Image (cartoon, rainbow, N blue to C red; front, side, top):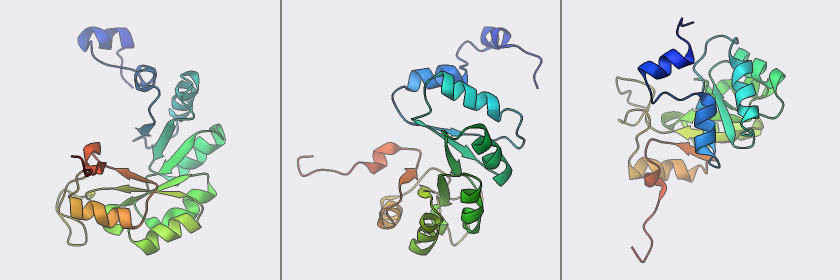
Amino acid sequence: MSDLDLATLRSLLPSIVTLGDALGASDPLGILLDIKLSHEGQIAQIISDVAQCDAMRRALIGLRSIALIDTTRRLSKDVAILAFLEDPACADAARAVGADWFRLWQGSATPAVSDAVREAGMRVAVMVGQPRSIALPEYPPFPVGQVDQQGLERILAIKPDAILLDDPRMMTRPTAST
């Protein structure tokens, strides 16, 4: 924990925002909260902030462990949870503790894996690019968040419920009039 309070932080970094500020500014858009905690201590405050900002219906909380998913679900039946787990074989375990969504990396987003996640009872979100700084042959040669049109077409073929990417303009398709 830091010894600095919010007022001190804001005096040093005037543009810093709280979770409540971000939730308020983003309304009415959906928002993915990519929580990179390794322990459960702050989950209750995050859920409280989301509820206080009346953002439960539009927030998706991304978590990286079965334990955090379990804790979050026990604290709130209403919050939507995205399992940011590395191994798609964990889909059944993630669903068993309350995950609603499962993230697949582009390189492992095959129809069979996507179907397995859906059979476990979750929605599928595909993260474009790859989770490595050194490209692996089974993954596309793009960093996390980036994709080319060919890669995007392959992802769209498995009909994911969401695609996580850096530039949402990639999702727009030219129309006959443009």
